[in-house]
Length: 98
Image (cartoon, rainbow, N blue to C red; front, side, top):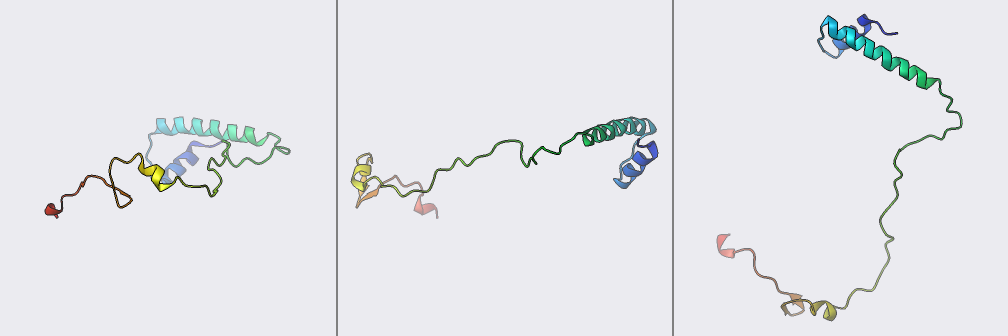
């Protein structure tokens, strides 16, 4: 059981100011929390494996495998305009403003 003075001491260490009514409320709440922790400590977890994460994570990345690339000529069939084997796009930077 935790006392009101212990809660006040911890609050003082944390530079927190509480009224007597708040200290009384927090003392009751802390006492309940400590009681629950004590109750959990009584559970036999001897054969329970240690859990490091509660959500199963698995790698969704594919294996890095070499594959054949699409030939340039086939890719260029979908390009509106090309020049010297490169895709032409409209200029987006006006050099006169530089």
